[in-house]
Image 1 (tube, helix red, strand yellow):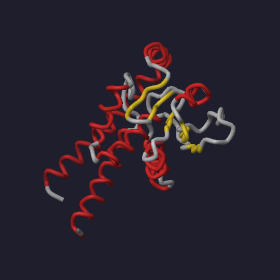
Image 2: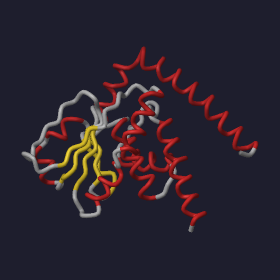
Image 3: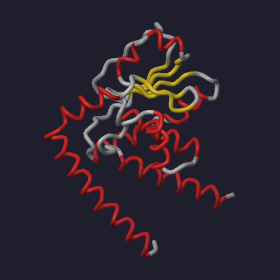
Length: 203
């Protein structure tokens, strides 16, 4: 590892420590207000790219939305919200059980689950056959956009900041006021980069 790379990693570690401290302080005092603002301005669902949607919880139970948009896969990125099946069994459903607290533990849990359970392969299997995919959490602001960002990063071979900008362009204000899962996204970017480097070396 070069000196510049070590310096970059040290800066990143300091940034993460600062970020998590600030985030928890702000949410401790302004959490309810921030949530109210988000619910006021955010649409219930957003089309991010062809057949790939992000939404809050109620959209996953909207039979009309599910039918009109050909949804065949629903990913529930919460621990607590129940599955509802408006299609009576014709939709594949996956749960990614993670808290939305910005903690390193939750970041690690989300990243591990996405990798260990081949979420990318499952999503692309549906998208490649023009089937709709809905990824939701409680509000569609942090957890579900993070999963979609990971899908875009791998599918389009782009860094995490470009993936999050793509999502914010279609669904603002996602990742507000801070990105709770920046640790997971940054680590996933490293994993994808290393995988690509290995392919290039063996190719």
